[in-house]
Image 1: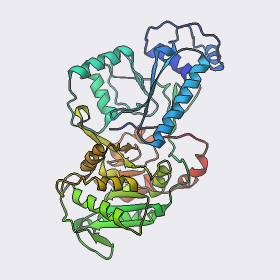
Image 2 (image 1 turned 45 degrees about the horizontal axis):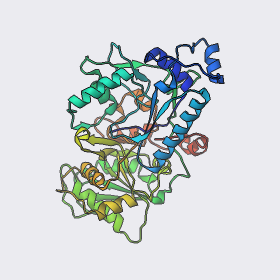
Image 3 (image 1 turned 90 degrees about the vertical axis):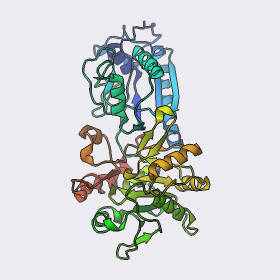
Image 4 (image 1 turned 135 degrees about the vertical axis):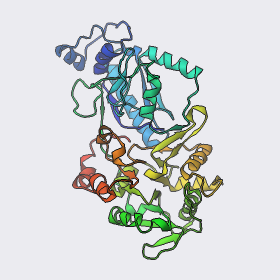
Length: 435
């Protein structure tokens, strides 16, 4: 499931001092040919360099995703690390940027060899494992098959796997993996700003399709109209019943209690076959999804609609046994027109109208060799279902479900356009950001 491909930066001088204390590789340090300013500052601050680990004893792995936006950010990060390493004048090895269906970045914690307490991790600023722990996990993975069919909350699932019911190490807190106040001692930093790469995508370039049915016309649709509908320039409600007051479009697909695959593919066909409409992006949401279209406009500025992009919150099914990733529907599924074109040209379709649409789409795109793109800013659940610390590092784009909450209040608390949103375009131009 998720690699939240959040933008994070490593500072080798601080990282060396951190790893010397927390990971204890036990590697001897070579004499440095010169001391860079950061190293001198570390000495002046009382942090000794004599036991530092050589950079050649550390493997840096940049976790990314397979599209041009994330590949570019990964390359920028690689260059930054290489430059810092060159400044330190030590030999080292850099793991190339890679796309890993099971990768994650864990915030504020590093794994050590002898921890005593299991902690539920957040992620963002990076994570580190000792080589003995890597070797232990490698042997375990070779001898044991992963037992979970679904990968939903990877930051928790990977911690449980490593902890191994108390037989393995839990997470060890490392404040130098920074997500809040950034200072000289930070080994990594994390920017939680909403990405903005170019001008925000225009509203007329985003078509929003709302899936609904007759029984929810009276309670869910009014919530959409009270909250985010006015942000959307192009929006249609797709139902099993025509109601002009909304209005809804009857696609001719009988309503199903679950799955809704037939309805979703009918929406895709309708979107692609409108000859007069060449809208670049399609967003499919449920009638109980709360979404910020203005923030989505910023996010989509980082993606090329000419590429096959399928974007949202990524889950996984059977990833340890040759399965596939998929975008979970409740948080919203975003398609570039090119992605829809390739999908429908493939003839990959639902095996029944009530098949799970998001999982069928995941299978189809996997078969086409088109990876889904994860963003941690889309949410399948409600704000109350997430740890506060996790959401504090985000500018969220969507939430899902109206159960036991006031959805209007949730929207205006978490998603409604604010003065901060309106100013974001100007304030972010100087930052390098990644999803």
